[in-house]
Length: 215
Ligand SMILES: O=P(O)(O)OC[C@H]1O[C@H](OP(=O)(O)OP(=O)(O)O)[C@H](O)[C@@H]1O
Ligand SMILES: O=c1cc[nH]c(=O)[nH]1
Ligand SMILES: [Mg+2]
Image 1 (cartoon, rainbow, N blue to C red):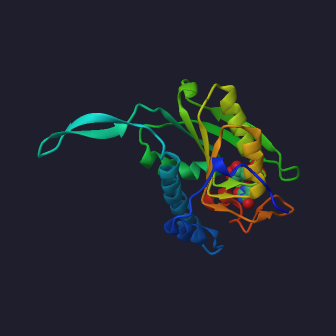
Image 2: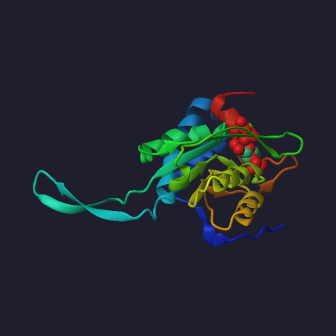
Image 3: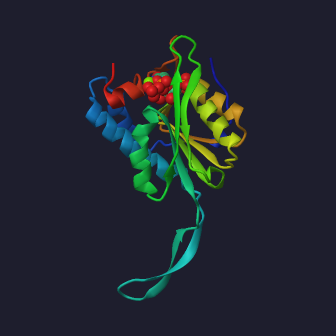
């Protein structure tokens, strides 16, 4: 079954280093310590792509040699929004890239039977409507969790939302893009499909469990 979606709002980060690291993450033999390190590194690389269009402004800087005009990011406020739990694994990498970002948390778990998302926690910066929101979660499966998180941010007045995942199923990408006409999605891989338990195939299993060593 082929799933069709708006390719113009999807970026696949297909850099060779990213693909190499993702393969190590997929390996069932990779333990939690290395898995966590790789999630963090890939978040930083993906964040780099997702901020590519941030505008620059001129600033005067004095080097040891002379004073010159150089570039800096033009006053953009950013919030990193991890979807708990697994999204937490991407926060440190994102903060390494954007140290001044605020962090808001959206707690969501999938019902094992219905695969519907259930929200259990929400805390975002007070000025969230002024911020570019980078929603982070390693896995985009049915898209239910990400769609609910994005809907919540829209209800808070957020104008610029970008979803950063490491692995996405085509069904999840379509669900997110269809539900929101402006969101942009970044992923390191578009995998084949979902299985009967709504897990991504080939995927990497349960990202939260692999990050935190549960189950
Ligand atoms: O696209 P969906 O079908 O909604 O599935 C993806 C969600 O499932 C996983 O979270 P999970 O419910 O396992 O919670 P956890 O992070 O606490 O493990 C994953 O981290 C996403 O949040
Ligand atoms: O494959 C999947 C699907 C949902 N959540 C995960 O962690 N992995
Ligand atoms: Mg999980």
